[in-house]
Length: 295
Image 1 (cartoon, one colour):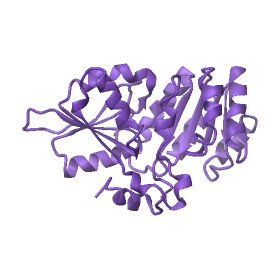
Image 2 (cartoon, helix red, strand yellow; image 1 turned 180 degrees about the vertical axis):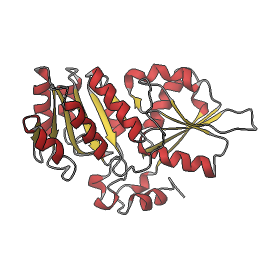
Image 3 (cartoon, one colour; image 1 turned 120 degrees about the vertical axis):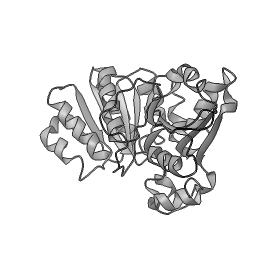
Image 4 (cartoon, rainbow, N blue to C red; image 1 turned 45 degrees about the vertical axis):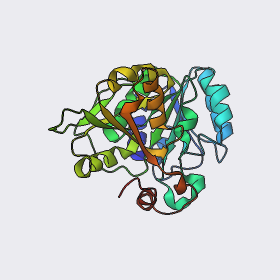
């Protein structure tokens, strides 16, 4: 996903001269192409994410669209105050791009595990969360980010090599995207609703234990789209939400909040990472199994 992100920015920059990319002293082996071609639109802010977010807000206040790029926790929790007061409050067109959502940097330890980022970012009223499940969803997310020029959080998986969709996909913010339908002998309508790079895990679940469940993705969500969820939730009898995040404050909690407004919360079950994974070290797959997220 990192490479596709840079490729899209590189292509967009040929026609769109009104955006810049800022990084927190990382992204090497991926960012060089953009850096060399557009040196005046590339800034390495160093290991200073608070300052990077403040600078991004300053540029945005002058009409520039800005992308800040770092590892998930560094670009969110380290600069939460600047995101809240500078970006979200002023409704500036700054996109916080994070790589390594969930346990993607599992071997690097808890400082690099993005297990609570949804819980933080979804409390900001103007920020939309973009959490693509594959590269096709990523391209559509970026198309909308460039078009809408609003505060946003783009959460990327580290090593998403498998394409889920077979072609370009279009979707509206807050709308569910059909990924895989199954013929069911039951009259009970069931689905797995995934956000982010765990979409691949959702399909594996469908092929093993949840054979009568359809799979849907929700790539764009957040506070401003919560009221839209009623019409989607009401179509189903059973919904399993899937996320590489702790249960508390995450995507499943978001859907429960949306459903509780209409008395639909009994339809939803959450599948998320267990809190016992906090502080553990290992590969992403090892930690998912330890957390009983995968078998």
